[in-house]
Length: 259
Ligand code: YXS
Image 1 (tube, protein in one colour):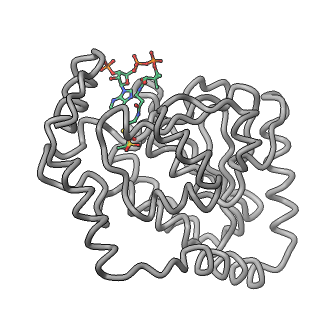
Image 2: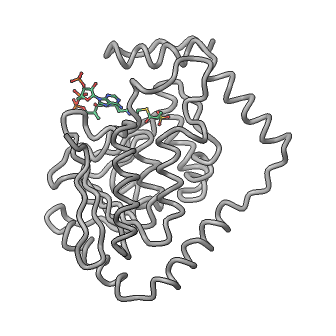
C-alpha cells in the first residue's frame, strides 16, 4: 500500500504522508515514493509543492526509520542516505515547498520540514531533534541548516536537550512562518500557495536557488571538513550509538556511558 498520497490541482502539488500505523516514518519506501512523486509533479508543471500529513494527525512524521539506521561503523547520515537525498531534492527544487504541519515532528523529519521553504503550523505543532537521544552524530549539512534557520543558541538547545519545541517556541526561533488554528490550516496554506502560483515561476526559482547557494556558502577547509568527519566517526563507531538504537528498538530508556 502506498505510504504517501499525491495530488496536483491548479499547479499546486500535494504530497500527503499515509503511514499512520508507523507515525509517517521517513522509511526508504516513503522516501522513494516521495522522490517519484516529486518527479511526476514536476512533469505536471506544479509551481508550488505542499507536504503534509492528514488533517487531525497527532504526529506529522516520527523521522528516520530507526530500523534502517546502520549499525556502528557506518555513517548513519551519509550523502547517499535516502533521507539526506530527499532533503537535497526539496532544497534544490526550483519551486517553493510549503510544509503544512499539524502534530509532532521528530528527528530527520525536522530537517525535512526545515528543508521546505515555508513552514505553516498550528497549536499542536512541535519539533523534537533527537540525535542525542539515540546517539547519532548529525551530519554537517544538517547542522548548518539548523544554524542558518534558527541561530546557534536555539539549535544548540534543540540538539542538546532533545526536548520538543512548542509551536510558539518554534515560531520565536524562526522555524515556523505562521501558526494558525488547525481548522484554518488547510485554507491558509492553499491560499498562500495559490498566491505564489500567480507570480513569476522563473523569478521565484532563481531567488530560491540564490538563497540556497548564499546560505550554504560556508568556507570549510579540507582539514576542518576531515576533522568534523573524524569527530562524527567517533560517535557512530561508539558503544553509545549501538546502545541508543538497541534501547529504542527494545522500547526502553538508553543508558549512555560516553564510550
Ligand atoms: O511497536 P510497533 O511495531 O507498533 O511500532 C511503533 C513504533 O515502533 C513505530 N515508530 C518507529 N519505527 C521506526 N522509527 C521511528 N522513528 C519510529 N517512530 C515510531 O511506530 C509505531 C507506533 O509508535 P508508538 O506506539 O510509539 O506511537 P505513539 O503515538 O505512542 O508515539 C508517537 C511518537 C512519535 C511520540 C513515538 O513513536 C516516538 O517517540 N517515536 C520516535 C521518534 C524519534 O525519536 N524519531 C527520531 C528517529 S532517528 C532520526 O530521525 C535521525 C537519525 S536523528 O535522530 O539523527 O534525528
